[in-house]
Amino acid sequence: MLAKSFSKFGALYKKQMREMAPEMIIIGGAAVLVSLVLYLKLGSVRIAVLMAMMMVMGLACFLPIVSSFRLGQEWNNHTIYLMMSLPVGGGMILGSRLAALLTQYVFGTLIVGICGLLLAGELAPELYDNLDLILPYLDIVVLFYLCTVAWIGYLISVSFFSQIIGKLVSRFSGLVTIVTFFATLWLSVKMMGLMLGQRTIEAPDVTAQIFWLLLGVITLVAAVIFALSTWVYNRRVEL
Amino acid sequence: MIEFRQVSKYFGTVRALDNFQAQLASGRVIGLFGPNGAGKSTTLKMIAGLNRPSRGEVLVDGLNPWMTRDRVAYLPEVDHLYPWMTVGKAAEFISTFYSDWDQSKYQDLLNYLNLNEDMKIGKISKGQRAKVKLLLTLSRRSPYLLLDEPLSGIDLLTREEIINSVIRDYREGEQTVIISTHEIGEVERLVDEVIFIRNGKTVLSGNAEDLREEKNMSLVEIMKEVMRSAR
Image 1 (spheres, helix red, strand yellow):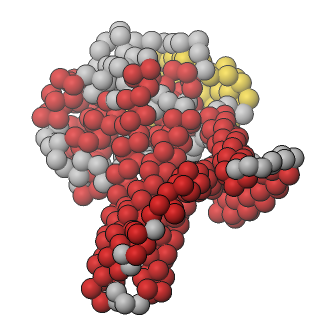
Image 2 (cartoon, one colour; image 1 turned 180 degrees about the vertical axis):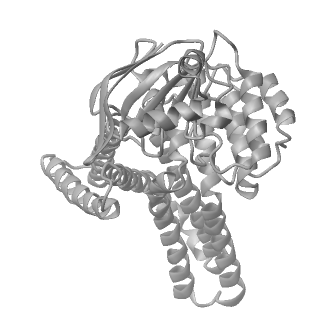
């Protein structure tokens, strides 16, 4: 039973990954291309290198959010008929999509990060001489990265929720989606603020505690919104 | 057995089904006939679990249709397959979800319908897409087969192939086939039972042969008569 569920999830995940392949190629290609151009042409202008890599990193972070709004295309292309007639619940349909979008984010940011580090090593080798100063903070860097993954997951969940709510109405679907998106963002950020405000942080390891707390709160709110999206998909969406 | 218990369905102010009552016996080929907008597609979507009644209840083998989606093979009127998939990839994807997928039947139908696994769905003709949809629906050994306007917009030769595939594949007594169409002439020879539907209500139903004998008319003529008198 579990193996069957995994293979169904795997088939859905594979399909999502195939649909997102062009964006992933764009990010990977842009990262490698920008690195090469910078290495060959602008090596001496460090600020230009930094700016360009930041822009590609921005693209890697931004694209999964844009791609998440493709859920609505299932209705426009009528492929929702296929998805809804499959004997699986909304959790699996939306879960596989979320997993694929997070993969896209991790792939994009890692490839840009690696390219950036390699470039930095070539253009400013003195950075590598001071590695022992950076290494003690590696756990903070990892925690920060996990927080960004959770944040992207949260934004994707809000995007799913708003699109599903938009599909419940036959008229002004786009407007309802936009209004729901921003209203859910506003409300959930307020909730996060309240949850964070109730916690006290004590020394030592203040930074690590803050990141752990952020990770927990963002993940919890994202999970609630995702569960709500799944519930609406299973109980209310129809064709 | 499929049961509709006083089912009404509203889309905003539009009433698609109006107190619709029906019992669809297992192991038969049932024709759901009526003009455009009669409520045929809504009826099939309810059986497939894609629509819910606004009032009343739909039961498939005594269960909510959402729970029986693995027993139902549904062919919608619209093109519902991913255009970037090849026929082979679409079959691989769909087969993952159904334990009743029959690979040998799939291969057999693939040859019979003159299709190729490497064909990209977005790049083939409308007739070929209709055949691919049918191929992927008929490759399962499902207890219920729902065909929503399977001949709509398809040329004569392809229609013949589609009808012959359905006849060839039908497992009498084992499988319930429900065909919704307004092109009755094409499927007249297929159906055992008929339900004529208009404005979401049954206007006439019964055994196809009995109705033909009783009225001494073809099903096309019967439909014209009942639709005229229902106005």
